[in-house]
Amino acid sequence: MKIAVLPGDGIGTEIVEQAVRVLNALDLKLEMETALVGGAAYDAHGHPLPEATLKLAKEADAVLFGAVGDWKYDTLDRPLRPEQAILGLRKNLGLFANFRPAICYEQLVGASSLKPELVAGLDILIIRELTGDIYFGQPRGRRVSPDGHFPGAEEAFDTMRYSRPEIERIARVAFEAARKRNKRVTSVDKANVLETFQLWKDVVTEIGKEYPDVALDHMYVDNAAMQLVKAPKKFDVVVTGNMFGDILSDAAAMLTGSIGMLPSASLNSSNQGLYEPSHGSAPDIAGQGVANPLATILSAAMMLRFSLNQVAAADRIEAAVQKVLAQGLRTPDIYSEGTTKVGTREMGDAVLKALG
Ligand code: IPM
Ligand code: MG
Image (tube, rainbow, N blue to C red; front, top):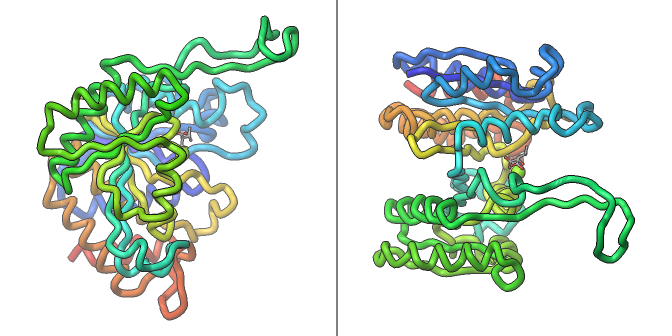
């Protein structure tokens, strides 16, 4: 089992280090190779996703990814910015299905910005399409406006588009996932305004007929954003496009107390996957040893479960995380009075110990 380890920028290196320690403690035959990605790769090789890094990722069974980005790269040409590394990996590996679970751990109910009764027991799964939509749609660019409100003015444009097969395959992923959960899918769209999402809605409805045991409903994205903060427990599986999924998954993350807790998996059709915390590189706290490594450690567990077929090992990691939370250990992002504040490495130590 070959794992490409791509720590990236900011807190990426610190949190991935802890996840690697946990993986190494499991006595599995894991072959891990590390490479530069994002700003770190740009600094060393002049490109955020060097050929060698992409090759390593393609040849691996799974990629463990930290985070990329830093304000200091914001003025670079877009193809050289750190974010292009993750977008390039998604595209080149065909990682179209992004799983973003939002689970509110019992011990962290108080860390959510919502009232405890709204989030206690929360367990929803956002499935975000990851290789289409306005993120990748062509044409895009800047030009002199040929028409519109201000002909002759400078303008920029992107293209939102989805093809039927792209929608079909992500819909199937969602219905299959729902079958293993509470058998409900909410498809989020903007069919009241956008052609792209009228097709989305039509196709998801069609595919839904193949899954009569799964209840399907549809929600406009603005309403979905509202319902997520009003009654989040009403959701089971949410399936949506790339951009809406980007936005809704950050909102869902906060329900759980901290985005520092949320793992994610991005899979292609052969179950090869990229696993990363849902949060970013947090340059403001990088290098201070205070970042929460749990999202990355939980991402490593997802990797074992989804791509490496090591379910028992995944269970062990998840149980260990529960245990350290029960012990009252908290990084600053989830700290509350009466608990014990620890740093990144101490949290890693505690998980290692709790593995038993
Ligand atoms: C995410 C991030 C990325 C995205 C950025 C870093 C390109 O926000 O994974 O949610 O927009 O998809
Ligand atoms: Mg995002």
